[in-house]
Image: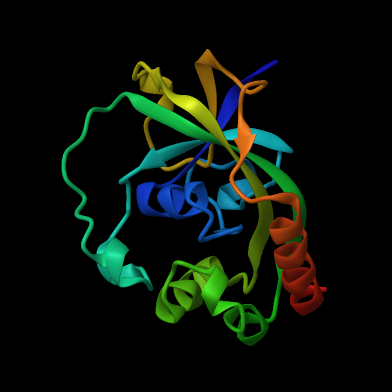
Amino acid sequence: MSLDVALQEWSSVCAALGDGRLTLLVRKGGIHERGGGLFVPEHERFALWPTHLHESPERLRWSAERQLGSSALSKDGVISIIAQSVKVFKVTDLPKLLTLADELLWTDAELATRFAYRNQPHLYVLILRIFRLPAPVIIPDDPSYAGCRSWLRLKTSVPVNVAVPVLDDATFAHRLSRISSVLE
């Protein structure tokens, strides 16, 4: 089994998802999204495409990520994790979301900015089950991958049948339950 779709996300967020520190992804949408820039959770399983586009250390909560610069990297994609969207919430209560600070990499100020973007006060919060590939897959750059968009249709497929969960079942179930109880 393989995937040919990826979601672009800040490289520091991908790293935190990949090592199990995060299970949440917060999205608003990119300027090239269908529907005028609003994020639509179009796929249940997808690769995560790390990017430095718009990534800024001062917009991140954790000190380790603040030390990451947005240094010039190869434009090729390096896919090392696969995500399965387990639950999606459209959150219209920002203070409720902020109670999950330990599951969020973004600062409160960054979340507030995203929440208020285009005078549409909401964010999509995805609870993700993350799977790690045994070796990264390098996806050659393509002009269709450029720009501020969430979803990428990959020209090279990523094998997923060899991916293993980052968190064991019990740990993931506990975090899923805790997050769901706050957001439902």
